[in-house]
Length: 238
Image (cartoon, rainbow, N blue to C red; front, side, top):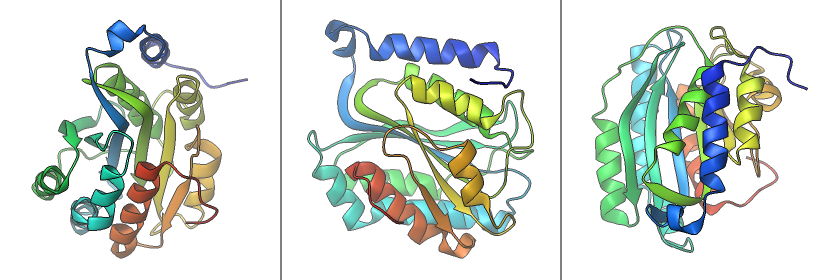
């Protein structure tokens, strides 16, 4: 049983998403079919300094330009995914910096990489993992795509310290609506952050946590994470 107080908007978001996922085919046909709808949530809280944010941004851009990532997208059943990039920190501090974009080949992947590299930092504050989960659920509801899988990819370097909900409560609602949440933990401040994410943040089919020992390792970690999420295959160790 969930013991945390759950914000009304979080409940509404998950109920709406559940209805959307169970909608009849005529409703789903209004959207573009993709193999994966992926929200990439980048930590921009006060614990992330300017250089660390730049390493996240550069690492993510390089990952999308990587031939292995592009190849994984093209090998999907439909050969295309939809991606959104969100910067997040505390409550009410979630910003869509790249709206839903279809990636299906090298050109579209490179365009996304270019947009990521030019993205300014727009959020800073406390750390509310629950709020970025709830926010992401709403983005799925309003997305222009019909996806086989829905994944929230949360990168972070700290534990939840703000917001009305506990991360596990928001996670459980999202998972109940068919969403998978994966984590990328950066161990520059909290040594056991990966354990915290496994217990409180990630969930859903095939969920996993990738560990970066510091921000310099973020680029390689997000590349491996993208490959895992795009391919949709569970592996024993990352």
